[in-house]
Image (cartoon, rainbow, N blue to C red; front, top):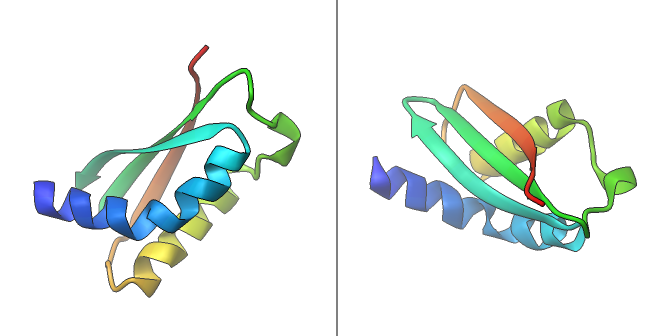
Length: 83
């Protein structure tokens, strides 16, 4: 499972810079069967007005993974305040 998690992290690396520009740190929390959970850690620097709804972020991440050939059924995104 660690290899799959690394593969997912590598596939999402292009998205990280965009999230970081909005003050978010992207972390792949779990990769279980065909469901991936991603945490986005928000800080004081997070541009709250810039954030997409979680459902749109999930779709964007799912599309990115599928484009890289990683088949998953669902992506769950959690935005967490990390002050």
